[in-house]
Amino acid sequence: MNDTAFGIRDGEIAVELPATFDAALYFIGRIRTPWRRREDCPKNARESDAVCVGRGTFALRSPARPNPIAMSVARLLRVEGTKLSVVGLDCLDATPLLDIKPYFASTDAVADAVVGWHAARD
Image (tube, rainbow, N blue to C red; front, side):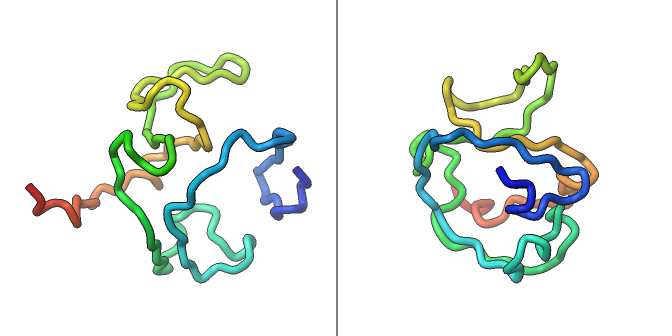
């Protein structure tokens, strides 16, 4: 990856990507945001109160979803070279890993979050 291709920011590093793609993904929607250039996009989602709109297929917590991937908040137990050992996953063996981020309660936890659209469903 070219360090200037995406405008590497302070504290970020670039790594080489594999020569070929591992899989194809189905886009389940498109997000409309006010940012057209990477340098305008906030580094942390909580740094902005801009209203963004997503349209597509959402809220699938089922194994029958368009992409065979999962999302979980897991507890890191140890790091051994390039291997991470975690607990708290709810996905099948060999589920593809697309990204991993550190969890910061100060920015990732939403204390006043509420269950919304499906709260009244039986």
